[in-house]
Image (cartoon, rainbow, N blue to C red; front, side, top):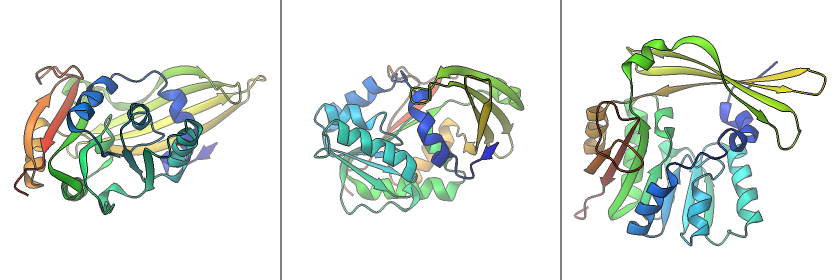
Length: 260
């Protein structure tokens, strides 16, 4: 059994396999890209799941991620598709954003903002994005809407998420997960377990532990206001439906004011 202290380093080779076909958010992001134009900044870009489709459509995109392993996978795909002229990948902690340029649109996709575990980290990222946006530029934060009933069910039990076929090794890959919610701290302690099973039934297991901090609607609005943003809307789905208590998503669209 191998334990990875940095979950992103070990998870990079499984990420595209795990998220194959996950594209529900792409149409929404394309809509905002069409509205704002280039250049576009993606924070926590990972292996380029969202960044690459935008680049294929002609947008200039900068992707920032803290994981060299994830960026290496993204860079290989960028090179394979000949998109180097439209894509720049930067290894950087988004809490210390320093790119010496401004953007028309910035976004953090699919719960990645939840990797920020306290208010100081959240405000550091929001402040950095604010500095890097053009006046009038937009920020999109895509988060899950916390559901109390689901949080109460997160008691650390191990659940089989999916069974996949590894494209490189040909091995069967089983993804399991354990989640335990700390309601007082608004933290979900997550452990992903990835089992690779060879033809003889021998299992190699890799563990990826990490924490996520969930936010509620008005907490998110207050953070954005404190960082100098003007809230445009909170949506409850990728179809931009009105946010409601039962919404699956909590998607904030905020603007850097023109006057700044």
